[in-house]
Image: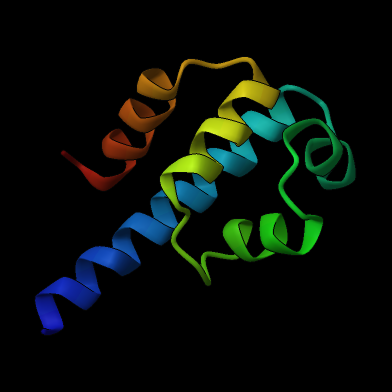
Length: 83
């Protein structure tokens, strides 16, 4: 069970850093991303603070709003994880 928890922690941290980087690179606030993606701002905050793991639908919504291909975004998450 510990390895699974560690992996989820790695995913959360890598996703959080990647999300923040893409959002800041796009020069948009969490509020604007929430409006454009349909993901509630409080959920975006939790994602950026690595307290939750996003669902697949959420990933698609965020990537759509950021105008980045899901595959490219996930590849950047994987790079942060060292895979």
